[in-house]
Image 1: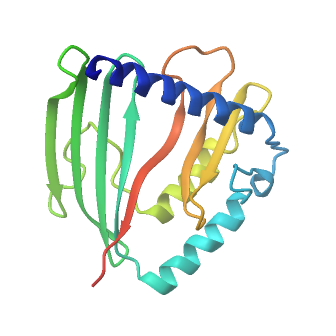
Image 2: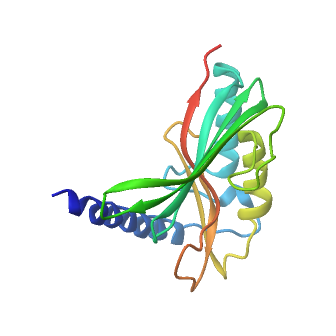
Length: 188
């Protein structure tokens, strides 16, 4: 039965991507990012307002992860720690999935602290969630919708999880954008 887990994972992945594509086709971008909505039905502006409200309640200290996974089995994960609105740590791990052994094989890792942030070229940039929202609005939601499928998704409580696009006609690993795979508040 263990041999089917990778296949089941791929099946689930492609099912999710297919359902996201259906939802993304319902989105319209007419030069106004306020009109971009994900399946939570929150627009970019509504999500940003919810993020601001969440920070007022929970503080501005948190940990989040940005992930990437290729259909080939290669992937990476970057964990960013933000304390009082300042990025203080960045951890990175790249891996290749070994289907025969049914496990990840770690290729590279590093940990940076506030003194050496950005000293490694691999991994997601050391940005706050506020900076990710800015990047989303400037770099991803403004692409030409006649040439790209645009995605914007949030959690049930409004935090952006996906902001990016796929160029039409591109077949493999074409997503450009932000994919927040985990988020947790740091309680001071």
